[in-house]
Length: 265
Image: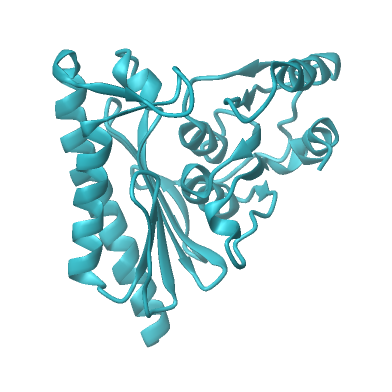
């Protein structure tokens, strides 16, 4: 094994270990959520709790101990610079609104970029004990079982995930839904973009589209979809692009053209 491959393997192993450890911490808070102090961010539906911050602290601490030269971008604490070619991109709890409202559709999302390429994607769903894991050239798996997408699935014989937030107008969301339904498709929204991207990689959804999403919400899912044989719209990572929002679209091959037309991408 080359040093380059060994570096990736070591970080991939750490990502999976961190995800399950962080998931246990988050699940303990979830099961005692009546004691959580909830704060709002940009709007009443954009919330954060001590659980989010504690989980991100844990992940940052583990990364700093194992790979002190790596940069880290996290939803709660922003960017810390590094000296290596790796940048970790983490969402401590994606789906905080479902989390604080007692729904199981939330997850821990951990990704790592090597240069400008997504090299690692790990998503852990504590309520279901599901670990989605992928690394560049190593494929994607769910709890150790290889994930491979079915190219015969389309928007008309499968379900598409749709995301929305305060960055997107209600009219825009309504237009997306209308176009998808007019094309013969159907949709769900479960409150976690990262989890719905994992569902695309697992073949549970045929695609996922959100007009505006941050890197910490989508990087791990993008890696999973790519390694499972799907396609994703590029996310801008050069310069300060990684810290800004972008349209996010990922799909199995049979749904790509339809969803790109619906999204205008």
